[in-house]
Length: 134
Image (tube, rainbow, N blue to C red):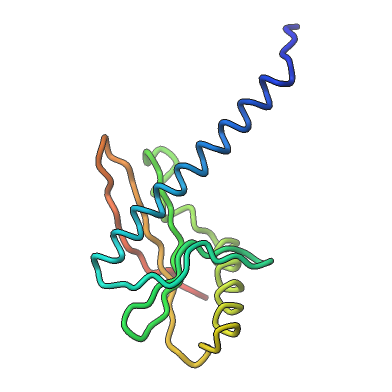
């Protein structure tokens, strides 16, 4: 059996984490530009609570919009928006409730959306998809 030093394995894990963070940051930057072109005003990025994180909080007129950003480089695992499951939606709901209460916005209209970004060659296909809540 071939012995692989632990330091090499650690470097690969760190490299993958850096790559994932870099990809996430790229996706969020693309999403912010996309949203601003559509008249959204970005209020908060990477809002974190104990129950979850919201990638972008924006205002669209008088409505607060909680936005999850998903970037994929191919559709081999499905479209980006398909990766937002019930568990993620539940975390977004809990974090958004905390945000609304913290900033005394519980009486204002709000909604949830996904910015779905698919890399196609050197271009990006970006869609804005409402999240259906139960």
